[in-house]
Length: 279
Image (cartoon, rainbow, N blue to C red; front, side):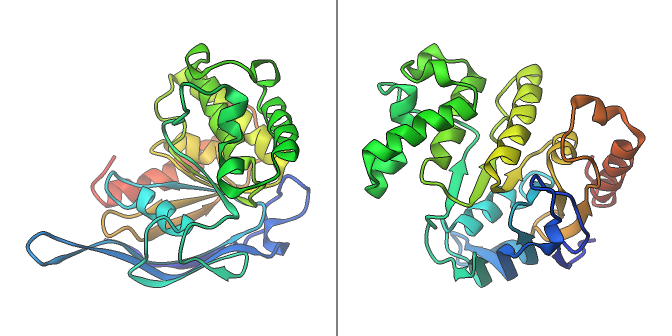
């Protein structure tokens, strides 16, 4: 049975700057959001909602749920890539009706242009947005340094590992300095060891860049390890079954996954899937 909740980050959680998430203004406010698709026979299928949630600036919210529950749909709605059927979305106080410039996107595949170097791939959004290229090139190099690729700026994608390509994609999503970073299973195609390294790298980048992050994953441990909060979606139509505040240290090592506290969070989230008939 789905549980519809009106939820916000109401509990205090330490963020990268040392303040509390609850004390920060809202980066994203979602109110009664729904998405319905038309079928070939003239019917309608509700894919998502209603969902209401508030995400503070500087928060790291991860989203988990069964396949087909609308995780990626929610991300596309929040970023303005697809139109909503009902409800409202506000990003930094502005209604979202189209792709929002203050949002950076990272997908499961890095989608790098093979004929361009790492730094030229990072610069693509700057060219599309008409930003000053001299300034953007300096920023691109700084971003490559931040993601640990300072010495690989002139390498082509086929000269980079899968994890390195995703780092380029993360740098590219930040080139226009958005305040919000949305990530749709960005590490899903990586092997387990590389994925763990990328999780650590992402937390480091998040703390350093000070962005608000929305991160979709199929992995419950990954959701807990990365997030200040975990949104658990129900089976279709996706609704918020639970919103878990993760009260773990802001600076985390992989060893934290073996702690009792981590196990409690995992059990709580898995119980939602078990209730709905999923494991």
